[in-house]
Length: 344
Image (cartoon, rainbow, N blue to C red):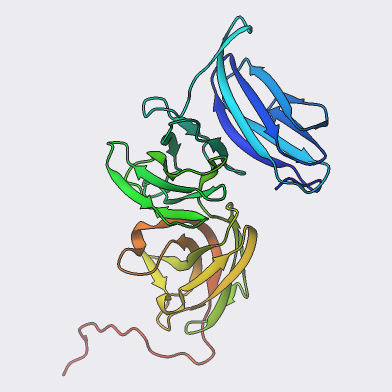
């Protein structure tokens, strides 16, 4: 759905001397298409349908396509990448039409997603996606692959690891159809499969993950045994709701050790609407917690069961976020004894 209120943005990756051919059809009123990177931005005129805009990038890398209309309207977006010789002789790269030439989904997600259409006898489109990695564990973050198709269609998603092993599949008969993916490698291959065709045979594919943007604490000073609240500022990049679990731990250094404290009974499942969300959970500092400054670690998990450690979307650590102080009514929680030097 196009709107005069904001631009809709798509990401793509191009190589040197590749041309982007953008076509926008079946909309009401006038619309504009822009293509840009970090240094260049070029736009079409504001035109009635159909609109076609072409641009050749001399430098490779991540590029953006921005679209805006002068009224609320649906539209059909089509694009092609072409390899050009001397900026004149151009031919389609047929990117995404076979497994050896997948469309590269730009790192960090696809903002507005990828718009594509099955043409003729095509039954599969191929993509490649590289997820970010955990800064400490060096393991890939989990992600979500989501698809929405035109009316009357049935498109499935299959996700393969770098070795070609099928690791996830989503085959619902309704949209949005999406799957949580626990990858074993950072780079993964995604196939969109046409099961049932109808009409335009168009779809929008989004591959990304929810992200932690920040946090707030109901208090930054707590006592052992005290409950406090952690608020998470989270981005859901998808066009539909998703469910995540809010995880949290604190860490404090004691001598040469690092002590971890959890409050799993307050792990909370929340539903994230599209865009930015503020969500929260409680945390109880254990009665035997060591005093001092604690590091706060918060995470977004995909599920809470025996497999929860595998579906990790995001993780953030904040040093000295919390101070644990002496309680008003101290209790004995640790007791050590040494041999007496007094005579019996």
